[in-house]
Amino acid sequence: MNRERLLAQFLRFVQIDTTAVDGATQYPSSPGQLELGKLLVDDLLAMGIRDAIQDEHGIVMATIPSKRDRVVPTIVFNAHLDTSPETTGAGVRPQVIEAYAGGDIVLPADQSQVIRVSENPALEQLIGRTLITTDGTTLLGGDDKAGVAVIMELAALLCENPELPHGPVRILFTCDEEIGHGVDHVDLQRVAATAGYTLDGGGANDLDVETFSADVAVVRVQGVNIHPSIGKDRMVNAVRAAAEFVHRLPRDELAPECTDGREGFLHPYVVEGGVAEVTMRILLRDFDTVQLSSQADLLRRAAAAVEREIEGVQIAIDVQHQYRNMAEGLDSEPRAVQFAAEAHRRLGREPRLSIIRGGTDGSLLTALGLPTPNLSSGQHNPHSPLEWACLDEMCGAVEVITELTRIWAEVEPE
Image 1 (cartoon, one colour):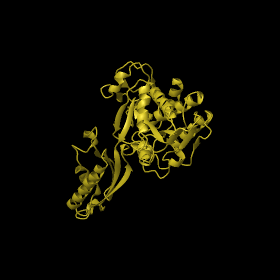
Image 2 (cartoon, one colour):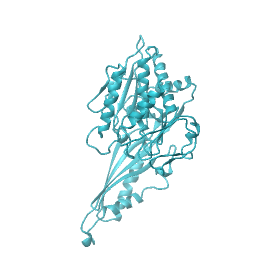
Image 3 (spheres, rainbow, N blue to C red):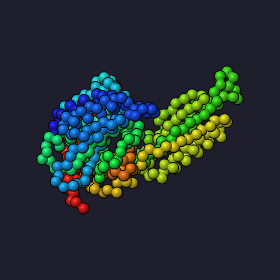
Image 4 (tube, rainbow, N blue to C red):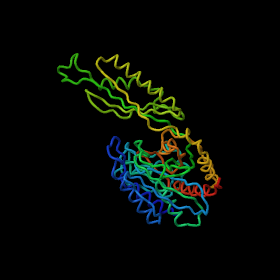
């Protein structure tokens, strides 16, 4: 492994603005994703990977041919090119901290932004390591460019060391994962893999085997707008109705501010509009898929109550499917998790079987029939100006997936 190359590539990737645009009509939703994908294809071709391609949807695929003299399963490693729209990814100026000495990290361009040890206990275990932060004005993009860099270093490593045993290794870089469209244009027949792994996890040595099940509710509140000077008994204010609707949602439970672990939530995260009409978007999340129906029913009851209370208002709720708990599909190929755990143990590490209070492209790929657990890639505090990554943990991720290719290459023919 080339540690310096891995760092240089990561720094190069995060400076390309690939912020996803929620509600965009084009795919991918931002031009930077196409720019980064083209760069990756050029790099893969330069390594000698002849079939590297970026398709018309911005999806990047490539195959590192098998080094075995018999048929062994094909595996695929996936990361996404886009970054979250919650914080800008334009003008990222990454800061490299060599030999981190401990303590809080004040970010240079906005000193009100401080990565505090009290809020990031993982820092206590990383003294002496190399960290990468933002300057405090943007996100970093480690979610998921850390995963992209790790997979690219694996590709370089396998190409430079033909003696390393591995079967067919596919590379898959997707777009718009952050807005729920990461696998919209992925052709699983082209991928043709037995198992997949997303490199989209935090820290080190996590093996994520469950995610939330997820829907999103689009709530449209219809009012009646008229000049306020003649509004008596005629105006129906959709803004007030929307406020009353949100007020009726649980605040001491079923809210992300007060839930953790396996607890689900309802999360209003977008409100747009005016007196005539307000549109809201609300996330529905639970590890138990059945509970999503209960959450949707709660929204409908709240809407009916507001319609009774505010004469003339109409509230329509459209609940849209997003993804399902990957645990529901991983049982179809138990080796996907077993071999990932074994890769950690061969390296002297104990994997933590964990759950994600969110989702990955692996959730959708698993639901489509390709079992795809999620692996750590050294990222921390995603979607925030306080985002940071650890180069040493990224190197560890390269070691894990290199070992994974070796384990899958040992599979005996059936």
